[in-house]
Picture (cartoon, rainbow, N blue to C red):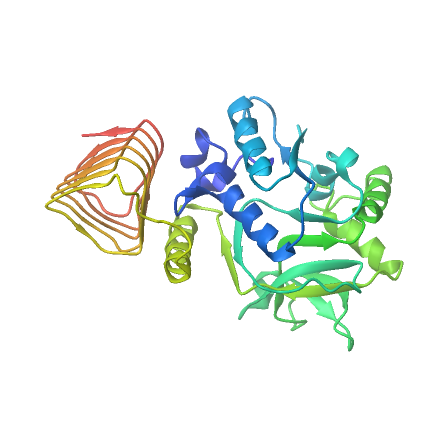
Length: 333
């Protein structure tokens, strides 16, 4: 999670993208918790690979340590000071690269139920897609082993798109191959890629299998996060395991159409909110209609008619726009 989240500006100017809440919980928290559910085994350590300390400071580290502790794991913090690719980022966590491990990119969310294949040296998590030419996909042999990774194929290879989550029975093998990649200065697009390490493992005869997720939700830009928030709220409502609406909510002549996430001490006055709206703690909504939107904490919305909107923290908004994207500490009157 070392990137700057440039596609999500202005929301990623004041908070790292993986810590932006979707359906009330930061993206990275949801991702790690969902991976833990699939693994169904104790997690000893979570290694977080962050960007420079000016961007990912002590408050971010404290959040990640709390996340790891909630899963009974210790947190290890590493830094990738230069954007040199996924392979380089993984090698920044070299002291933690031993034994069974999962690698995940913290800009995606999943819904999955499957068992990891114990015969595989590695499992690459994939999602069936209708337009595989737009993705990196896996090529399978007759034994359903992965034999090649193909980026945006011009001809049909498979409909299994790589989503950026990988399991390794012994990640030390990947470390060895990535060390070779860095030593030989093998770069693609000016970066060291995880795929070059994986391809060397395949060339050595290591067995790679797929594990297909039920849902794959991207968190790359504003429009996609709004859509992901809608999908996640629907899933959580169907599951019934999370309390989505805090009991401290104050409703004054207002209508709430579920599913929604409503944080602590939220006030809705003369408002119609929902469906598919997430509202952070201590936010006030007045004289407004809001649907399909994310609004973060300590924000005051008045005289608004919002749809497909994303609004940050500590915002003051009084107006009549619709599909907007406003970062933290903005004032519109």
